[in-house]
Image (cartoon, rainbow, N blue to C red; front, side, top):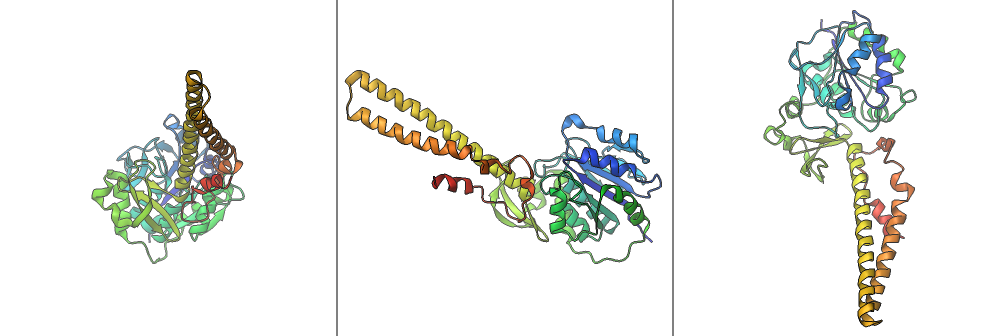
Length: 359
């Protein structure tokens, strides 16, 4: 009888501390292959495997494209490459980024769910925003088991909280409890489960991550057209439904969770406001120079009065924008867990502009 021989783990902020604690508790005879993705920069490539080898019982390596998957081995994502499974081999892909990330937790989880179905155990650890939710939902939908780090313990609880909102998680555990539960689940025989999500949708998304040709592969079949455009390439996006969770993918393949899209829209609003303030201040200086030039040439008159009146209006609008840009409400979520978005639609970023009109 088959057992669950594939473990996929995703972490983001706080993962550098959490992952070694989990890995150190896994037994040498675990009986499963372990795949780990953590958001990282290019300069961080390879450091996870070194840390795992120092603290753990299982050999860990940075994944190599095309290598055979072996049990009792840990495969770590390489920087700027999606870590995926294809058949009995590891794949590294330069496919489209998801929520500005490559490697992406969701890409790893979806590929494992497609290839191994009920043989997969998915684990979401500490992190900001809502990465991992869609992938964990897919694992559960394909018959796999799901584990989430307790949000009360996680230094950055947004990823675990998002997963718990949208996925019927099997286990919510502290880091110290996860290794023993994983070892037990790997050894337990698989009972028959009803598999929900159609293979075709999952196949298309895996191929997009591998082949980087979303339009030809049928990205428009993944969901209805949405109101939003892609922050990466400005292409139109479709809304992809994973149970109660909605995410977005453009026709070139970039993917976004709701919180990632919200973060970008907030940044764009602030950038637009600063640009508008700069243009108003430039116009204020220009009007001052024009007023002074006309006064020097012809003395006071209606023309200089008109320039002065317009300059006064520009100053008034500039003052409103400065007040808005220093409003704490514009920034309160921009640098942290704005990720705690509870809905499946990005918040209306234009709310900041509504406050400006009320000044």
